[in-house]
Length: 141
Ligand SMILES: [Zn+2]
Image 1: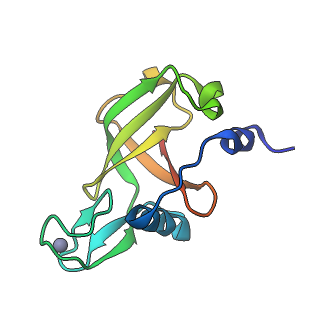
Image 2 (image 1 turned 30 degrees about the horizontal axis):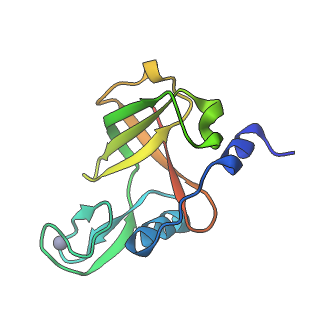
């Protein structure tokens, strides 16, 4: 029998990313770290992935691991979900995290009650593999 957390993860809907988005997920899964698109012309990190650098307009890029350190830029407390896989975790917090490298990513807070988290709070973003094509981002305080 699987551990309780594995059962919850197994029930959750897993998106099927495509194109540049799929490249982002594969990069995260390849090294187990949050990995962002970086312009190889000027070094600017960007997210979500795009074809051209907003800083220098180069089309050359790579995906590179980042620290995963950042702070909560925005958040929502979810009291309702349409995904049965999340029902047992209500209420939970979904957060936009501004990473130390600049770009913002979206993830769910793990092991934190909604009243225990604030905007601007320092957090760590980590990757959890959900199959071969999707990297779920967990945020911990
Ligand atoms: Zn650039």
